[in-house]
Every structure is written in structure tokens, then in C-alpha cells.
Image 1 (spheres, one colour):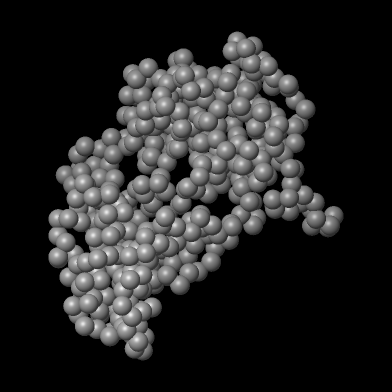
Image 2 (spheres, one colour; image 1 turned 45 degrees about the vertical axis):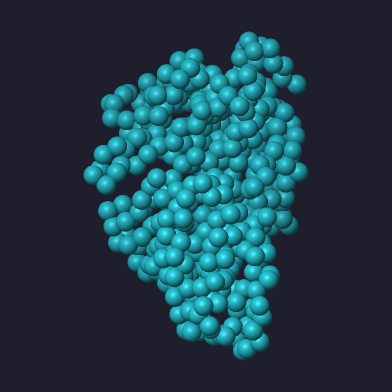
Length: 441
């Protein structure tokens, strides 16, 4: 049951006062006054870890209702219910974002400023009627979200990455690096984890590709999921991780914990920013190094974006086969260039050829995902990393997405109506498949 539904259940018995609806400033003023009274009255009880969420919702709802009754303000039933719901959402939940978070059709929430909130639904962006009262109201919600994961956002650290309890990714940015008030972006995670069958039904990839990738995981190939922002990299990484046998020990390394692994033998590591004094930061690279000492069968790095790429490649080259990660890039060839650049960010002046040889020997497969026109997310390439030829890494496409044709005049269109087809080239990874007793159809 959603928070709003729980709150509505407690409001059902509220007496009805038949008066005109309260409007504008008077409603906002009453809401602000009741909000302060409830916060002051409940005090430390709001932060009690002993009260479950449902009980906390009931306590807050009762406190709001009592405070409203004492105020003697004449309100209609609809205004009374709205006031109780909004104040309770602010205190227990996430204010005006609460109904948007409960709406499973929404995949992204974008707060541009307190009075301008957009959402993404079915791949399309639309404006909502949800509003925050002012900048301070939005800041309170941001502070509540980041505090739950031990992070902070202020003038010294005006940008922060955090997550909600369900794993949804949150990015917030405040003054002085943004003009016009605080802003926040929430990438929601589906309450029910998507499976490989779900991706096939949605057309994200074919059953043949699912079977091939499943066997690649069983054969302990090192796989890199590549794609742009919002293309579905983490979703695909979750699906690939579900193919890992439950007997294997998995260590995940993430900037903000997002992966949803259902195996029991899993250890989850999460980076930590510096404290107020600028000390205590633990970077992804530190966690990757530590993961090597935790006797992992596989290491899953949520995303490589810096010098940790060197440590990840070294792990793949030193017996930790079957490792997985994601990277931001537009094509498998771009992934090679980005990895090379990130290795150089580690501070070692390595020859370019040495870096490429390490990449070539570490990686086996690159799975490219794209967000097409209209919001459809598709696997567009499955590419094998072969060998060095001269100074270049040789790549071989095993599956390629064929875009649909239009009318012969405008060529192909980047919509979701195409299909992923095999190129007919046989993988050169037969030795690894044979070594692990995996057959390739």
C-alpha cells in the first residue's frame, strides 16, 4: 500500500465541515503553520528507528489531524484531506514527489525548480502539476534524501549523488553552482525487477541474443555494457548478473548502490565522499582494489568513469574472469578509446600500445545499448574484442541492430521497429566456451 493510500485511510473518519474551499495564500499559510506545529510537537519521535513506516505514518497523520482541529479553521472535507496528505507526505515521505514516486509508469522525475517539475513516461517527457512551496521546501526534501545515505549537500558540496531506499538514483544540485533555485533528478527503478524474458517481450533484444549472453556468462567472459545516458545499461547489467550461478561469490562496486542482485553470496561496496573537513573519501578505485582481497569469483563494477578502469582491467587479467561493468560511450569503438583515456587518468605514463594490449586481453565482449527515437531502448550491437593488429584493437560484430526502412527516400529511421540480427560470424572465443563446458549453438 502506498504512503498516500495509508494516509487517506486514516483521514477517512475526519468530520466534514461544509464550507467553501480555502484558496491560495491562506491555504499555504495554514499548511506552513500546521507543519511547524507537528514538527515541534513530535520532536525526536520523528527520528525513532523503532517505529516502522506504517506506524510513523499513523502517528504523523493523527498529529496533523489534531493540530488542524485545534486551529478551528473551517475547511471542506477535500481541503482537509489534501492538507493532511500533503503535510504527512512532507514529514514522512517526499512531499509533492510522493505520488510521482508511486506512479509506476513514470521512469524519471526532473525538478527544474520548485514550481516546475517534469517526468518521463513511456519515453516521453511531460510537465506535471506537482509543485514545491518554495526553495526551502525543496531543500528540505533534498536534505532528507541525502541524509539517509550519509551524504550532504551545502555551499561547500553543492552537488551530490544519492539513492532512495528502493535503489532509485538521485542527483541534486544547489546554490551556488545552479541559478534559479535547487534542482533534482530522480531515475526511478522498477519495483519489480526486469528479467531477460521481459526485455525480449519489450523488443530490447532477441531470444537468440539472450541465449548467447547467458552462455557467455556461464563461460566467464569479461563483458562491458556500453551506452549513453538513460539507455538502459544498469537494467541490462542486472539481467546479465542474474545469469551468474548462485554458488559463485560476487562483489559489486558502485558509486551509489543501484544493482539488484538476487543471489545470496553477494557483497555490495559503495563509495563515500569526503566529510566537511575534506577527509575520509573512499573512491571507486579504492573499492576495486579492496574487492580483489575479498576472494571474489566475479567483480561487478557499476560503472567505470575514471582511473578505476586500470584496476578493473588488471582484475580481469589476473584470474577474475566473468567480471562485468558499464561505460558511457556511443559505440564499441568509442569504448576502446574511453577505456584508454581513463587508464591514463590513473597517472601512469604507459605506452598507448601497452594499454591497448591490456584492454584486448582483458575484455571479451561489448554489448552496446541505445535509446532510440520515441524512447525505445534496444541492444544495438554485440561485439567481440579480438586481438591487436598493428597498433589497433580489432573488433568483430556478432549481432547488429537493423533499423527499419521508411519510404526509400529518407533512408533508415532510428525508431524501435528494427530488429537485432546475427552477422553470421562465428565467435573466436570457442576455447573459453570449451574450457567451461559451454556449447555454442
